[in-house]
Image (cartoon, rainbow, N blue to C red):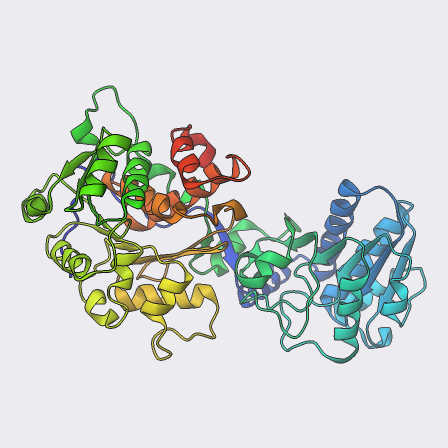
Length: 505
């Protein structure tokens, strides 16, 4: 293990897990529903509020036009009946189709259907003809099996209709607990869900198919959600705001953290990471390299960064003032990188490993895992993650991204920041943070080096690993979203100097 973490002496004490926006499993959402009903709120009242929220979201975004509502055989269909009734009351031309026999509806869905005064079509495919808008109230987050038969036909017809689709709770066909498509699914331009996001909204295909997401309050108390929620949170400043480095008039560069970066011959990556760390507040960054081109590039492109020869690596690792150690950006896939990782792990400093520092151990990942501790952070993209954690017995390949990342963090004993459009950050103790706001423009060379530099730069100033990784993912995403359309990594570094207040959700 890497031993005790050495960070900036002025850093705040770790804060307890709290705040943030819970992300619920379908089971947890079901518990929240049942507890609310047991406490005295009738289920039909929740359904009425859900349907009203759907109708209000539609009316707020579109003018009156022909709308087709496709209702399924459960409570999701009941929500659709309420939304249809509300829109019809407001003057919208509504066509409603029911999948299956309406007479077989039970419970609250049957009550909602009885309150609908219009006709009920049996052919959803035909009902979509002439629609300028469609509401998908077929199946919500609790879908238990792949869609087939008429259900699959209706969803395919939705996708082919050529009009905007509004999904109720979850696009039909998307698994609420994994974001995976079960059989077939139709992309929505808007999804209205209730109380909290579900896992299927924030990872996998569900993130890409949900469109704009509205989370409606239908009367489930926050206290009930807190009681049933597990340890998965949407990335939000409430999780780490208390740990963000604070600027003080008495600060000097040594009090703002001193990052140590080991680099090889890939000069650009090292410059990006080092400069990003300084942009987010690290007082000093020392780049250790034997590559002349890297040393020259750092001196010319980032003159405020210290450059040291490789011979000083043991001396610098022994200096308690320097922490954390960042290896990966510009490191190169070599035995020298592997040795640098092993040396750093024996120093007792916090570690941030990215890119080549991970790939260097792809053939024997257990060696790397044996070097890590809970104060360390790994930042793999999907390919690097699979190379390290792809063994079926360790992290099942068929599992969803949250499950896989959580298992990876438990296996290696460190925080794992699993990059992607659905960035998942997991701690060894099972806590998970999901960042979904990163724009597609981040798919550019060097953006990962910038992210690694942000993570290490924040940790150098005293942030704890999970908080530092989560805050870095948010900063990276927000800066990219506010940057030029066709951004390059250099744009990200320049924009990092903007005000921290942009990091709030």
